[in-house]
Image 1 (cartoon, one colour):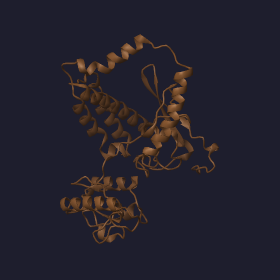
Image 2 (spheres, helix red, strand yellow):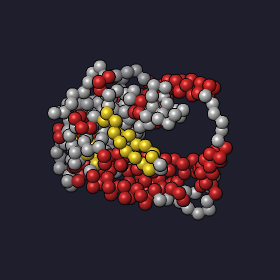
Image 3 (spheres, helix red, strand yellow):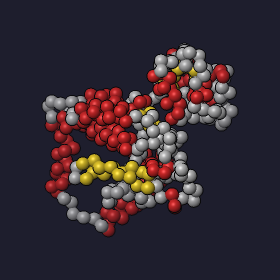
Image 4 (cartoon, one colour):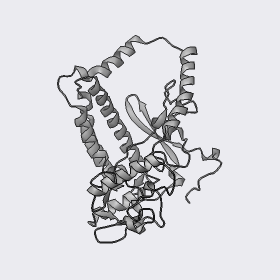
Length: 332
């Protein structure tokens, strides 16, 4: 969550939240001071706003982490980072000059990192590799810690470097020992599809499509705190945006890249909403208002998405907890 007007994330504010009725709402979802945000704070914000008790404000003077007009990160109480401390203090001072009333609201963090890979960073599509944030969650490297955007804010550049070293060696060996003939017709078809937006004189811009998509997926009630009804409504809206993908147009190579990004975002949104409908429980940063409990008995599973003859097909795969040294306790 962050300051509403400046849009700046402000850590620790979830410890001292109040509604417009001057009620402390932090006690509804948190029993002790924590150093980071979690999904329950977002759900509480939504429920308070939906009940007409908003806006939501913070009172930094009430928390030892934010009192005396200082944020813990702007002091040397934790670490000595003179350049970082100067930067953070400048940012917070600018924010306070804009956000004079300390109103807060949740922001949207759209990281998923869901591409499944093996120990060689190879995807389920043979000889196709994925590294970095795109496959961080799909590699299960985070273990029991939520993958982005959970407690870890992105997987970090060193994860990409390490994964790249593995994937680079393995992919080079494939190319060297198992290289196959180039399929000219397939290459030509891929080129035509990739450059198609450049050849369209009429159609929709990537910016138009992305803005419509963001309006669907960014709201809290569609992306973090969901219900079956809201998800189905979001999918119906998404269908209208999806229909525009085949008519994307680009003026130059810069906008061509944006067209492909827009298409990928629409695809990701469809996978997200349909998978969210399938999972009937709440877990970590995934909250179903209509299924609030975590169900380890039936849903200690990964959801898989496959392209079967051009159709998006969903399934599940059990988490192999029998291989884990420390096993989660199943619900009874």
